[in-house]
Image 1 (tube, rainbow, N blue to C red):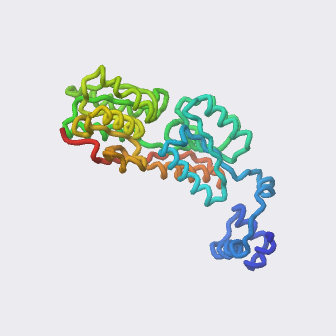
Image 2: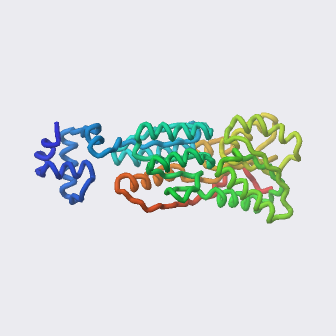
Image 3: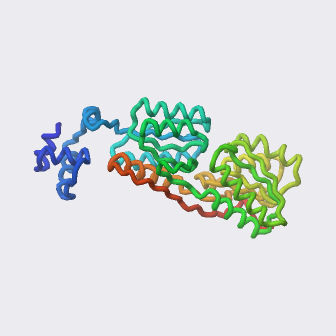
Length: 328
């Protein structure tokens, strides 16, 4: 099957079919439906290589993520992938393990593959990576962790989310806290820790000790008990993400510490497992799927429609109270 067959089946000109496929000019909804139905009926598949050479596109987008094994990022990738698929664009994913050098290499790889655009979830300190994107004039959208006014972005209000958590804990009579956060160089980690400290500074009856490390289950498992060995048992362990909270819960349970009877534990992200953990986790819900989808939509605006308008979106968060906390 070729484009001529599609045109004949739809009862339109070859140029109309071309405009529908390439999106290069306006076509009425009625004609567009006829063309699309003919494509479906005939099982026509455009030659994307030839089309790409003609339009100077690869019909691919690169997505750079810190940890694809983390369910939060996996859901974000899924949101972006499904939105891009509707536009006939393939997604290339590179995992960086939150290493700045890997982020730089990932951007260089995307440049070498001539992707049409990049969705970038970095650590927040990837100056060279960002400058490489600028130098090569690649359309890009930054998600969650990077604040650069030269690009469109979609972010989560990390500060507001953690501040809401502290307000809830304070209202339920928690006063003594241990905070376990993510890496110091990561923007989301900085914002969450800043919210905790600012709340504590506003309340003189609060005692808090802060520790930062990795956004991982393993790090929390290995570090929470040594920390408790030198600190007074807190009313609550406030965690920078759900994976840290899971590690804390499992480590405390192995030592016979009951949650939430002895210690409350909270997370941040509300990944799928949070509602099904034992006990179900009190956490901050982030719209991770929507984060990826909105990022893809903004990027498509730059790629497909040549939009030069920079857009910054802040997605709201919400507190989810479950059984890992109680009124003290």
